[in-house]
Length: 161
Image (cartoon, rainbow, N blue to C red; front, side, top):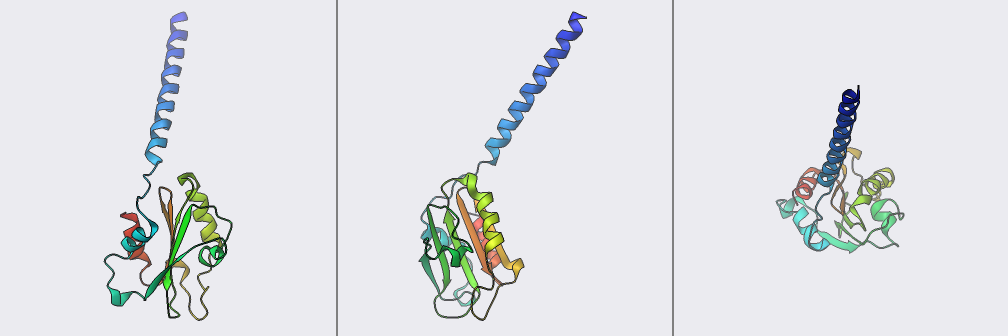
């Protein structure tokens, strides 16, 4: 009887250790490396492979607390820095915004907040189809992409960073 009890306790201990090790390995694998470089340099990489004649004439704007709602749909996001890329002189539905967060642990909540608040018809005469609004993250970096033609290519470039 004592031998059976000892075996049961030993098996339980082994199972608990296996679960703890499995959880710790899963958590380590879910941590992504942060993307290195300035937001300006990363923004350039997002447009790589897209010919100039297929993208609008773009300019970058620093996202601040004053203009965050326009670019992100909300001003209720905490971040270290953010940069938006939009057309300079035309009514073309195109916007790419990069946010470097305080922590990559915030990425999922930030993505959901952006998805729930962004207006794909924020421009006066044009809009982006909801299916062409992409929000993704990599480490502490979040990207919002709105474009009816280039969204998938820009997202692919982001995922390949």
